[in-house]
Structure formats: structure tokens, C-alpha cells
Image (cartoon, rainbow, N blue to C red; front, top):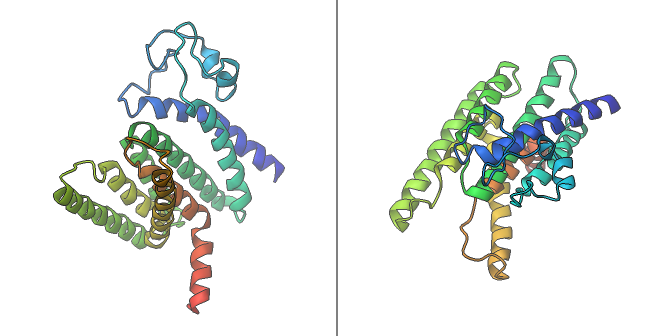
Length: 261
């Protein structure tokens, strides 16, 4: 088990380099294929070591170099959170042997993708389509390895995509605000429904919505948050991660409480 922790945590640390790169470049439609060691703000060339996950941020004191521009806090937090998710995946998803090890890998990759969603939507109010594509690929693999029921996966994807599309249409008609519910949120719900299935995706939606209600309500009442819209994507992403880790356990407990076998 100790070896698995080391492998997963080390892999997540290496992947955090790509995650940080995606978080800044994808919403701004910059090239993510061609690597460039440049400041994200002014494109001045900087030393490669500043982009080393976690340690580059710490030793550079959160700055790129001569230009003095500050690095995004995501360059510090993402490696830490990615390694934490890796350790939590090994700890939580324990019944993995042979082919079932793939399920643990899929859950981790799904969680890391949600991590990108959290930071990109919070910082820019944009959920990159690349994240949606990654989740679709993971959903297809989950269906191939029979971790997600094909019918429930397709049903979940269609139901939540259509439902959120209708809600967004009504909200725009009623308020006239085209940003009432972003297209990224609609697509996110569709692909998460595809990966998690209808029941677990609904659970993730409830958890995310309740979290948004509590946190945003608190920030509004305390006047901590001013003149900034609500990014719903991070709350949805957190809800979906919880559903991926604990969805089956929560639903089984709920069914047992109701006396449903």
C-alpha cells in the first residue's frame, strides 16, 4: 500500500505541472502544446526552475523574475491539492485489483480535471472545453471497463445537459442576462452525468448547490465579496468529486435508511 501512495502522489505531482499550465493558458486560448518558459503576464522569458510545481513558486517567492509580475496562487495550491487528491484516492478507493485498478486511475484523473475547472472558472469565469473532452474520454473508458453503466451514463449525460440548457434558456429570458448560467456549466453537467451516471451526478449537483448556497450566502451577508459574479463551476466540480469518491456509499446509506434494497 505504501508503494501505491508513493506512485500516485509522485504521478500527481508531475501532472500538476501540466495542470498549472492548463489553468492559465486554456481560458486565454493560448497554445498549450508548445511549452514556453515565459511570464504569464508580459511573456518575458524566465528561468525554467520557476515553473517547477510548488517549489518553483516557493523559491521564487511567487514572482516570475525581473518583470516583478506575481504568479497565480494556483501554482502553489494545485500541486498540493493534486498530491492530496492522489493520496485520498488510494485511501478511499481500496477495492482495486488487476483491471479494477483502472477505476482508481479514472477517479484520480477525473478529480484532477475538476481541479482545473475549479481554478479556471474561479479566476476567469470560463470552463475550457478541453476539460469537457477529457471527462468524455474518461466516461467512455469507465463504460468500457464497466465501472459506469452505459444506459445510466448516457441517461445522466442527456438529462443534465438538457435540464441545465432549459434552465439557462429560461433564466436568460427572465433576466436578460446572458451570463445567468454559463455554457461551460451546462456542458460540465452533461459530461459529469456521462461519467458518474444519473444518480451520482444528481448527488453531486445537490452537494455543489448546497455548498454554493452556504458559502456565497455567507460572503454576501458578511459583505466580504463585492462586485464579483458567482462562479458556479467550482461548486459543481467539488460536488462531482465528492460524488465520485463517496457517491455509492451515500446512495446505499440513503436507500438503507428508506428500507430500499
